[in-house]
Length: 180
Image 1 (tube, rainbow, N blue to C red):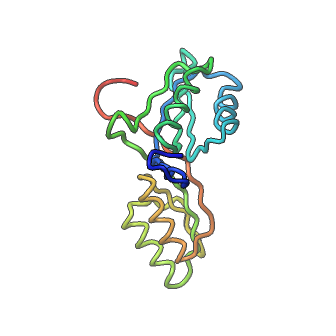
Image 2 (tube, helix red, strand yellow):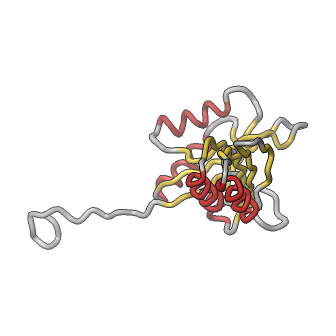
Image 3 (cartoon, helix red, strand yellow):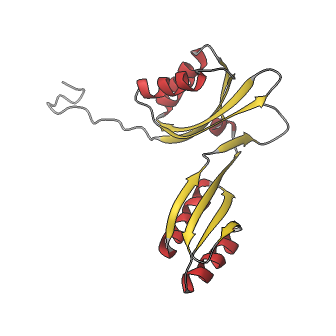
């Protein structure tokens, strides 16, 4: 029985789920990405966005940017488990560091015929999207921005005649002069 001498169970405490952007510095060698993604899938964590690139060619160092969600306890567990992996040099939670700059690139293919053609061009200009390809019946636009901005652009283009989308995932960096 609980403290109030009742047969009803204590109410379940629900912790908020937050989105976190993690920067992971690793050795650039075969299998590193598989080990990291395997750690996530093996424990039932989801990766919402993943970008990887070599950042220091001379030292063979890569930077992996991972966006994931979870309670504070889950995020702490993810960071601790990533930190224990052998090829990982450092794990930094950019969300906790403060205002990180986050951007993603999106390529959007849209049908553009009749009045939809001018509307597609007008919306692209309003968002600052670059026209990469134009035919008599379609456009391919490139847009760089926040995830929310790209989501809005895609929603608007879906009304016009969205054909295909390709997104890079989030690249993030902390503000200020200090390195990661």
